[in-house]
Length: 175
Image (tube, rainbow, N blue to C red):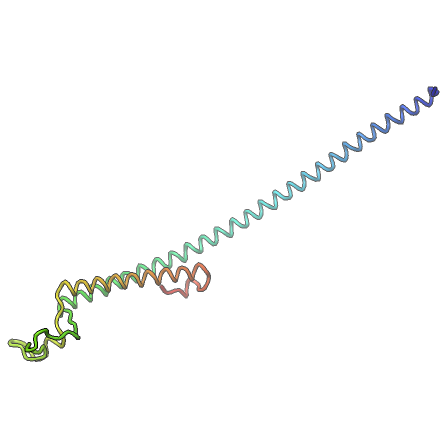
């Protein structure tokens, strides 16, 4: 049998050990939780700062791209207006003088030369070659208009691609 004083000492020792262990575990757990919470908050703050910085960069890039696109659109519209003016001028000239095919010869072997004197006209007034019909002239004018517009569009697309990839700056581009 264990004397009562020793039992009391052992009981107090076990109770002290249990209380100390429990207290140490609780304090350690609180410390770990506090450290973990601090790391999580630090990571969240860092992520929020990075997200804000990246968002600002994206907005700057988007504004820059829109500005570049606006510049190209203005240049494209100006080129389209120049093409429209050139087309109007060409159509006016064709209405006034006609459109001739310089390589076309008369189809009959005994035909009169186009450079010969025409009654009521001057020598060589018609010029070499034969005049094209209105339909043929209109077709050729429409074809050249479409080709010019396609070339301008392709040039604008190429200029935009070069702007986006950084091969040229907005001031250097010419569609």
